[in-house]
Image 1 (cartoon, rainbow, N blue to C red):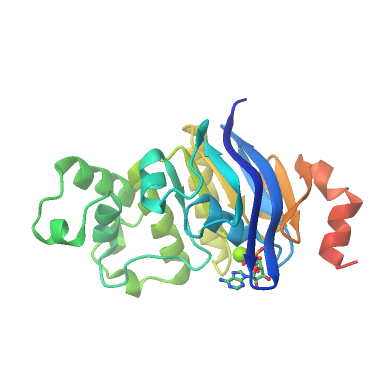
Image 2 (tube, rainbow, N blue to C red):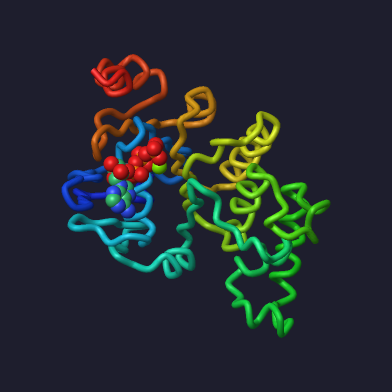
Length: 243
Ligand SMILES: Nc1ncnc2c1ncn2[C@@H]1O[C@H](COP(=O)(O)OP(=O)(O)OP(=O)(O)O)[C@@H](O)[C@H]1O
Ligand SMILES: [Mg+2]
């Protein structure tokens, strides 16, 4: 298996807090890799550094063999690296369908001048159908439930046909039926060749879906391996129990 994402010695401080501390790990192409760890262990900050949402103090990020450290989220998106946010980010004042079309790379102005390409419209319609959002396609995103917004955010990033998708807590606050739906979509996309890095607190979800699992504590990995391996690692139990 080849390495798709390589994080090397990343560090990020916020004042006196070292959120990410000399952190190194890799994500192999074709995996659904989990990033787990206690609250405040630096998972979201790592996502922010990898996706160019925050600058790192030091360290490097390589995607598909190329150095992408500090590259903007937009350029990374075009290169095939996309992410979702812990609090789903959608455009509340646009309809569900418009959210998908905009994610295809078209500006608001383009949308209203109706210069959206036919290919993007077709793709958006396919995703609406695939995610069973067609019934709510004309609703404003603001009218969706929390879980539906997360689903829409996931569907929207697929407009770019990404190679690597970073999901930050895809199931948090989502009802059990929608969690199953989310899981089915991740599995389907994974089967179609997409690689995933998933931050998640729901351990059953992680153990069902992810391999390998990287465990974070205080800003860097303390263990990694198969779900079974990390579950029996005493350092992992210590990290979660707060020693
Ligand atoms: N913008 C910021 N300014 C100051 N401190 C921050 C900022 N973002 C994160 N931190 C701090 O960095 C540390 C890591 O936070 P981060 O959000 O990355 O953790 P996390 O592992 O994603 O936690 P959770 O599981 O609760 O989402 C925490 O101590 C947090 O308070
Ligand atoms: Mg977080």
